[in-house]
Amino acid sequence: MGRPVSADVEELPVSPEVVTILALVAIFAIATFLPINMGALAFVAAFLVGTLSVGLTTDDILAGFPAELVVTLIGVTYLFAIAQNNGTVDLLVRGAVRLVGGYVAAIPWIMFAVTALLTAIGALSPAAVAIVAPIALGFASRYDINPLLMGMMVVHGAQGGGFSPISVYGVTVNEIVDAEGLPSSPGAVFLGSLFFNLAIGVVLFLVFGGRRLLGRRVGTAVPTHAERAEEPVASGHGAPPGPAVGPDTTGGGDGTGEGPDDGATAPQPVTFDQVLTLVGLVTVAVLALVFDLDIGFVSITVATVLALFAAARHKGAVSQISWSTVLLIAGVLTFVFVLQEAGTIDYVGEAVIGLGIPLLIALLLCYIGGVVSAFASSTAIIGVAIALAVPFLQSGDIGAVGVVVALSVSSTIVDVSPFSTNGALVLANAQGVDRDRFYKQMLAYAGIVVAAGPFLAWLVFVVPGWL
Image 1 (spheres, one colour):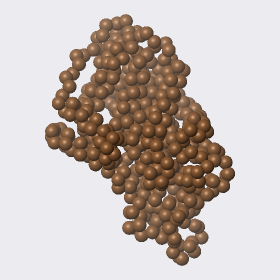
Image 2 (image 1 turned 135 degrees about the vertical axis):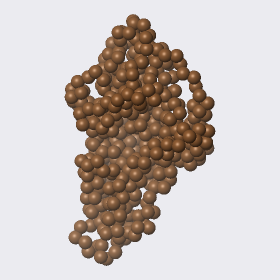
Image 3 (image 1 turned 45 degrees about the horizontal axis):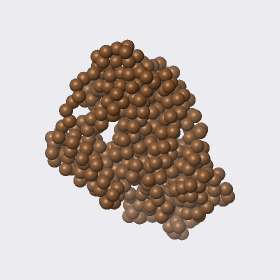
Image 4 (image 1 turned 180 degrees about the vertical axis):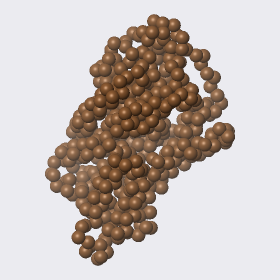
């Protein structure tokens, strides 16, 4: 139920519900066209709309601040920053590439798996793509792999692992679901996203030339993060600068797999810090998933212990915490709380339920999440979309878990768009391509995903009613 408003507020010509909806539209519009953090805009809207239209005090508004989620975001991104600084992430990437034994056809799948692993253990999706995309697209250029295939495999891999119970997306969705008292299934959300993106990967592989790569072999060396950082940054066609693209050390002569392994380098020794970090990551997973301890506090604890063993090296890790994402999620969810207090969630929910066809309602919500997310923050859209669906899901006319999975998938698979951070990173790091043409290819692919993705997610997770 919405919070009762004062008599003065009730006399306003526009109801609080409509004011909050207009504010929400304004937030997304401004953040889409101007480089302003959506979370900062949401905090401003929460303060102004909450106090002037809804009749809340600042203490009331702060009651909606998602403190537990903020601690989680800080903890997992701090831990991941340390893992990246001490070379543990590079260790995982190099080890994964060597696992394929030099088979070219397996490299896109390894890149999918590595980005999925990175997001599953707590990396933000753009961070994982920023690390893997330069390597993946370097391989694509060297060994004549379709760059669209390779780039999209990286993005879909990041989304595939992005809903694990200890990931940023996963924690965000599961906490919203629990807070609203909806049926919760973290495993279904994670596996649903993973297998959906995996299926897209299979289609990509078959359509964009994966079969012709079968049987070819190359060397397996890969540049480290430090080596890549020394190279100039690539950029292109209005995209934000991507991470540095390192020297080509992938070996393989003429790119057919028949030349000498001239780029191979001796395996680098595993350091004590890296072993300790791997143990720490496993410890976080066990304590959070098996013993149900708070993932945020556990991550900060493990990160601090790792920092104690190499304090000088990790003194800058705190600055690598994704504070912009913390601000984004905290601001948006605080404004969602104001929406709830104003009665907007119930207002929209009743309007949606008034359509009378549960399956149609679910499909509409999936498309809203997908289309808006193609131009705005997926993390923010997930929170808003699930919140708006709450009254509809509480009616019990349709499986709540299936709708949550479909909304989660619909709001993230569209990150292949060159207007999103992930898509822009792929565009910026493409090598040996006509950048304008590659941009148009990405745009066409993103259009297909936006048009078909939400429908397929709805068809798979909602229509059968098995979740």
